[in-house]
Image 1 (cartoon, rainbow, N blue to C red):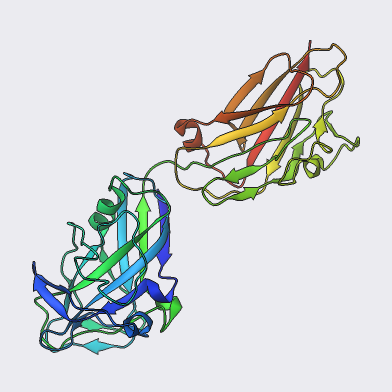
Image 2 (image 1 turned 45 degrees about the horizontal axis):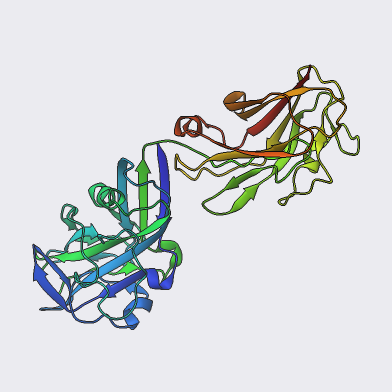
Length: 359
């Protein structure tokens, strides 16, 4: 299981919207949302008087969950700005925006159903008769999030919006005040999602001599993770003949064939193993590659085979064999299967092992 802990992180990613039309057991936004509703220090769902009910929207970014993933649980939360005990009934119905990638809020028709259609899935009534300042209130929205993740156009990394509409059972003139991002960023609305599935990692490993970028690169955020230490060096050396800190000849982000690592002239099961800096799991099972450059630096007629192992700790995730390695540089890109990427269990101990044998 993987858990995403999300919180509203911008002024225009939460908002109030009043002037409400009643339907389907809830009062939903109509009319125009004022610019002030984007920067209000409180979120105030509920009834502010006859025909003056409020809806609230909260937008969450970078939902790194692949389309169709099973959502184990999803919990939406808001933190009361003040303690309150209602003499009547305060109740909400929570749904989501039925959109592949929900846009941020702006003034105008933002929470109208014509602008932000609700998901078919909706929470059970969320009753708030008594609240305590700074003690977060939460509601299960698993079915809501699942419906959004199941959309055909959903892509990992998209944004989603949770919408709190006033339940028509709410007593006129009864509402509650919650913290917004503008009022207290650390107390802004939250969304916690627990989901099942693989634990993949994008890898780019380049650097059998001569080398290109030798490291791990996450193609979703463009952040490279480069070699950080030697595990074992055996008889391998740097291009300058150093027998330690070989990773330092492999840790630049752009190709530089002036520095590399190299085995002895006549290797016999000669191995070197390099460890990468800690990597972050992008939580998707496709588009993971190991790309590397390899070759012989001496054209002396001797023939060499190389076996490349990509590892998670002691576990071999994938391996590739190159028979009769040619003189000069050859670059290859190996696609990891979803089974291979899902087998990566330790993102702080990713390694590349190279074994060379002459014949």
